[in-house]
Amino acid sequence: MRRWTLPIAVGSLLLAAGLSPAAAAGALQLTSPEIAEGATLTQAQVFSGFGCSGQNVSPALSWSGAPAGTKSFALTVYDPDAPTGSGWWHWIVFDLPPTATALPRGIGRVGKLPTGARQGRNDFGTGEFGGACPPPGDKPHRYIFTLYALKVDTLDLPPDASAALIGFKIHANQLAKASITAKYGR
Image (tube, rainbow, N blue to C red; front, side):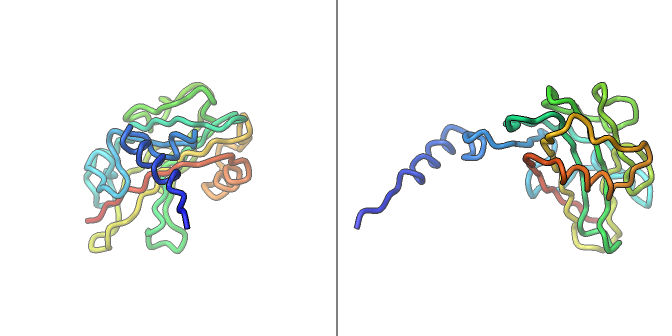
């Protein structure tokens, strides 16, 4: 019996060329020079407060491979391991224009986003980036940075929208998503 090895050979060629099969297929990709899949966050992305003494700086992020029909993007940073019963929202950015392909380091402060983009209220109670700050002694928490390609120009949300409402609107209008999961413990 003859086995078909073409998919394996193509995948090996793509990896040798520095491309993942998803990137070659045009899938949405999220990358960062500061955070990597499975790596530990640095003090730059750790919160300053709640007993943590980090720099509270949002990492540089870039993306490519948005699907046809993308009219805006949203970005979330979520800790599913927070001992709240519902996780912890660290950063929510939405209504990013479809021409956007990156967010520079430190843009997670109020007033620095691209025109039209908005930040939702995080679980620290602010409308900006809030870094990692798990309870001392917990196992390292996961911090999931997720970029969503959306089929709408705006999410049409009130200024005080909760993270749950923003998440509902994101998921209802999602075309594609890409994530990087980093970790941090203390």
